[in-house]
Image (tube, rainbow, N blue to C red):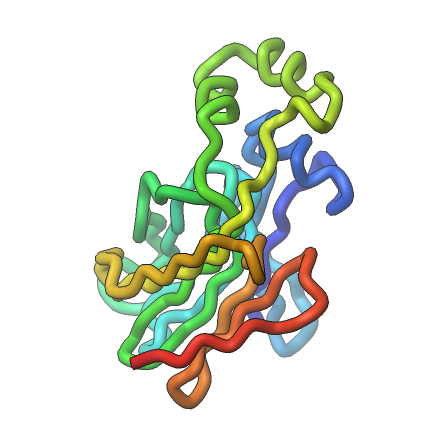
Length: 196
């Protein structure tokens, strides 16, 4: 079983702090059938979702704080190598899942935030100053309903976006029998989107 560990610095209640601090303390872990826990990747920026390729050749992990999906090859000549499946995403990637045709579905919680991008390019004290602002002034999620899918080469093959007026802050995505199911940390229901 592959799991992500978002941060070793903050609790889930303080997820914004980790995104602002941008310290890269997330990890990709593997739990073996015998119960051993192994660190496969370290130094990830808010590791937040894992998907195994349909052919099990690689495992992908979302790095919410870096706007990317990192890949660890499991089989073949590149086994053990780490590379980037998708970089410079237009929003914050959250949970991942494997879909039909080898797709990797990506829940996008919110579009990127210019203030956060600006702060990440500055020294740590600037990021701490932004984190010290009242929450209403800190960078926060924008209401949207968004999921996208990439293929095994990182090409975007589906991009589904909605205004977020009826459902928003998509943090989970799962394809089943021609329907895409969306989950959210803030909504009281699951959304269903017919595909095709």
